[in-house]
Length: 178
Image (cartoon, rainbow, N blue to C red):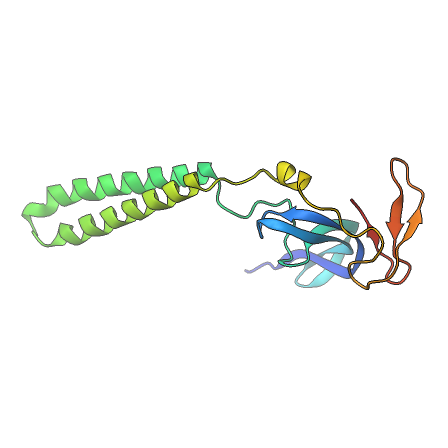
């Protein structure tokens, strides 16, 4: 029996924005904070209210700017090790069974060698590409315009904040952070 469950977001509303470094786009982008009411559902019937949650989303790609979307070094090392083991197994089985069918193991040898070569090239390519850590990249993001809203272009009002003043747009109701 197939059980369909998950989380549904009701009434998403933009509440804030800031300039941020998006790891998916790999460039400085505008990020918006979305507030939604989350509800757990079973067969698309809302059952469990989970409350209001806020999450950051890149305006360009729609992904959380701080979420890493590419395969890390550990995953590539594991992939290379598994493919190397497969190549060794195919070569070993091919050498043992070669006396039965001389043309059979050639395809296995060639395909295993190509897979191993492709995995090594991917590993070398990602090792050579230097990625900037997210927190370091955020230091080099230029702050957004303090006078105008990035979404509606309205003039921002300055309200008092604890460490620094907050900027609020009265037209669309969003806050500028950072």
